[in-house]
Image (cartoon, rainbow, N blue to C red):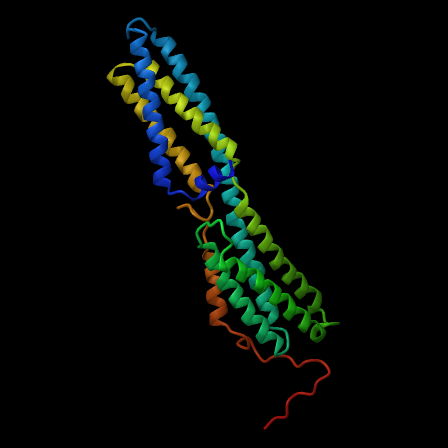
Length: 281
């Protein structure tokens, strides 16, 4: 089951669509052959009965697709909001870092720039079963950031900045765990499998019920629409390999700001308490 889930999240969408539509075409053809073998004439079946069967099958299929679509959209919206929340957390930490004395300001500012660059790279990385170098780099940068914060704490201990800075750094680190979890959160595989099986069964029912040229055209249109909707849901639910991904512009704007405003560009660094200022020329 886990292998099927990994394949559904990493396989090309065109291949999934080819298999899905192929299965529905085969099922519809099998339904039509069953109708012919049973000798059911077109005129012997009431139009009201056919309409009732098609409405029932398509109504339930629409309900299942809508429910799955809602689940995937909720997860996509959560990932999109986390991009903005993380960019705000990193940006706040970077601005507060400029209030620290050198050399802590320079060290932490450089680490925050590297961390932002790596987060953007990680967001654009395709899904892989093996932990990537970008993910390992992100974990190491978090450790380095906290070590640098510990080293800088004596310089800001007792100042109003200390608690605010530690809070913003903790929030930034917490956002890393939240975003990783959001990328591991998907619509349950059992929901997708049930929906795929039901669509194939619905194709067989349409092939059996809808006869004639007009009926086949209607069946083909319904299958194309519902199959396309399911492929859209699968694409939205794949944060690292789908065509529809969360907007990274907040992180890109933060990256541009950091590189345009390096450490020291906001003004002179305050002296470290207890140390004499350097002699002037």
